[in-house]
Length: 556
Image (cartoon, rainbow, N blue to C red; front, side):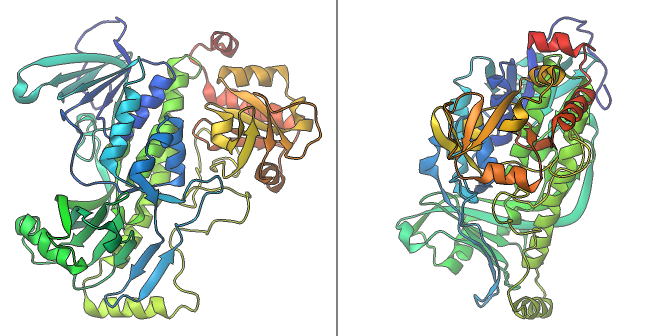
């Protein structure tokens, strides 16, 4: 195995786990749950005996909300979340330089952005993981050695102070172990660095009277002290402060200095409780490789970015959603191992957009030269309609051309040829199924879904149906909400509740769209010939390890 010391000679015996996940922060939790929901044996090794307590993520976007729904926790976190406010950048005097609307909905009832108390989110994910019989979590074990062969990977972990060692074997290992990832270092994988490195002090507080500190999403581009004020869930606030040139890092991170800086927002020991404070170096880096042999990277182990776009944890959730279904197909013998190469191919380029956006916002906010800041302020306030949104195109009206929060689609990977809609994020629509109306994801359920018009459903050939079975997918016919039919919504028929689904098909134009389990579009087809070509492309890209897709489909 490239980048890892040689096999320890366990032979060809069956590994004890299908997937070994190193690290049980939010990304490791989501990935583990997704895999266990498929029924695979998942073993987690986490170095900390208790959940990590220092301040980190404070928000997630609508795409991440879909992933949390997929792992069964969306309905459990209402008391630790609240809709985020619009993203505002102001100058030192409080004049608005830029506003990005985040206070709306994605069209299905989910907020565009949600503020969250991360420890509560991790607790909800841990509770969900505890309900899954094939998921085992080992806390308080530090990974110290990673080895492998062509068929199995082996991890040695030890308790604190090396009192006891344990060895774990798995078909695949995924490093979700953070910015200082042991797994990444074991692979010998370096960073592609974007050249952004600044220290910030993050302070989490609980106000005595939350109404005295209303929720906000404010970036203050003050050259004397760039700072940030955000909500991190109901009744909780975070203020962050940049370390200025010449300030001692150790003194900057003290509790005494935290209180001094918090006074800039009128926060004092007599009106707020400081729950956590920590100094972070914000970096912008993308791992040079995300896979070596039977080992893959996800989350902060694979990429790091400044928090200014709120995309760190969201990007990790995208990693997990992308990787889980591919591991499922490979483990089940329904796809060749080469499918996993598309994970890096898709995610590494996509996350670079998030990194670049975060750096652009950071460089806008973190200007410390007063003259340069004044030039920036004049340029931004001189725009007749305000500064342009830096994250790409604004949300298009209606359902046409759905896109993720970054305004970017997947450019290449496990996608049909021809460009969009292949690679776009499907969604922002409501459908009615046998249990009533709801967001499309909830109504359609997990797995591949072929959404098709009524007149196209019968055009699917036996070979295409076989391929759909191979990937554990299903065909769902979409009817107009006011359709006059004796067929009630059922497992294979839904109503287009808000009209967006059929309008989306019109805009492509297409008779059918194949949506992947991570809710990105594989491709679209207009007619029977197009469907045949679409599923021929699916089979070609899967390249099942058995070489016999029909046999794999029968066993799926």
